[in-house]
Image (cartoon, rainbow, N blue to C red; front, side, top):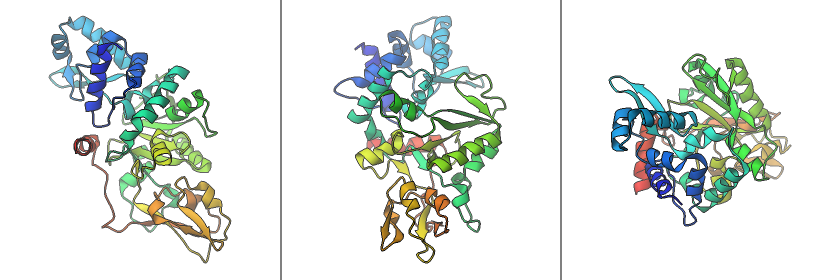
Length: 353
């Protein structure tokens, strides 16, 4: 495999999200599906710290015109990012594999890529779900939260939707990938929500269907009806998507189901409790619980609090209202990092220990 891919893989693994190397080199074959050898060499000189066009061109001994053309090409393919900084103009930087440029390939992913990802996931990539803080965090169904509980803004999907000026939906990359390898589930594929503070952000997108706020809320409601878990990036701010996850396909939740990692996803601030006097013993909640946190004892539901992640799916299916969410005590609460930068600092420290 071209040495440029090895250099790029090493640089990607320096990002706190992680891109671990394998003995088989499958991660290099994944990169070769997305980057040409020359683009891999150019991308390998980038990092999460933005660099100006002039800096990149000089470092790679290229004319700025050529460097700009190649960099913009990678931006359009969703492989790197750019932004404008005062005094520096456009600056470019690497983005993680997950969550990052992998998710941006859902309209381009083919069977070979899906098979390579599956091999990589099982060889090494699932290990990235073990590092702390978790990549994703569960947020509970809002209708499952008692009205008399003071809820932190970062625990409500509506907080992020209300702050946005644009809303959109795209295919779930996890379900697309699993379907391509013949392991697809029956859940809706097009239900990953994205939003932006910029008006009209998705109107020209070929991959993202632009929505109204009300349509975005309906997708969340439909996810509840399907028994899907809401999850977002593990930060209080800078949240721009809501995934609706299942244990059959979700790359994050699979770390828990297939590898037994209880820390593959961060829990919400809540846990479920049952009123035995109201429980009818219908067992509907057992089918809804993605985390196997419930069992029937003498015909009454019991919640294993250690296994409960506080998603609220059991509450929305309980016809007798025997189940409810309770907020954890202050000593048990661990607020998520304030933003992505704070998350990366903690994550980098965790991976280096």
